[in-house]
Image (cartoon, rainbow, N blue to C red; front, side, top):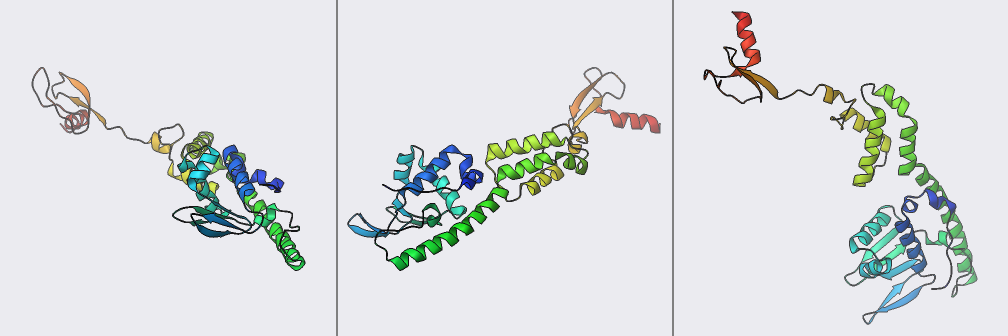
Length: 259
């Protein structure tokens, strides 16, 4: 397919740029999109494909990108969730509409259009592009990397807010958890604050829950002093020397104190 597309430099701040494979897939979809309105013959059916649309299938995209169908499906779901495409599903093929397609074109002459249509298209494209640039700037401000960096730069303030916690450890653990699970948030600072308030990492230094965690172990002892051993609460036994019932050491001490 001949022709070209254009990209704004702000694409580097977009989430699709953060993964090289996703970036390649997205550029490929832009390249695949129709530059003019066409009609596609599929299974003896005439299917109109408009400018900025792609008619394909999950299988074909997976083969084209050399990846699994699940990965292809996840990527399309992300694009659809971020309103970058509109997907029309059919039993035999997948119909994709690239949102704001005009922003990736020059807004110039398109074959088969009148002069008036060309002017309208240029005007629409320019207005859409200005709107899209603003949206891209807002996206850039709210990308995960920007928000995570902002949290990192304010760790001193978080340390004052949560003086009992090892904030550096909590930050590192939070980022590792995000990478491992792929979890996404609209506001990462709120998620991190919730992590600190809930003290997720209770088995790590700096957690008040870890410091106050009570042990389930107790000491069982013979009332006559022959024998004692560690055991869990609820476990009972007898002295191997005098066959007396073993009791929690606290009970024995209390009885002696009362006597």
